Length: 80
Image 1: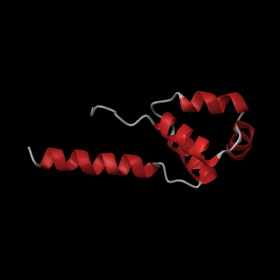
Image 2: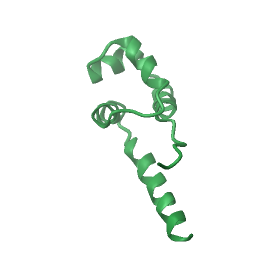
Image 3: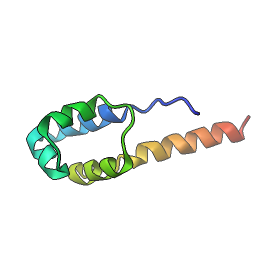
Image 4: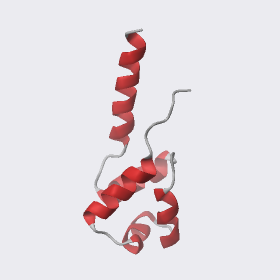
């Protein structure tokens, strides 16, 4: 297993704060409770269906971070 250096919760929290949205608003958009939003901010990994909901709600493709990590990792493996 490759070392995980993407903290998806922090990336979501940064975008959330940048947009100035309320936790209640985001919770409503992804159909969860407000306190679950703060739990999400602490997660290193996340279910893909939930990540899709958050990506749509925040209008940001969070999957792109993993795609970039994949490309970098594959390049390193191929060059060894």
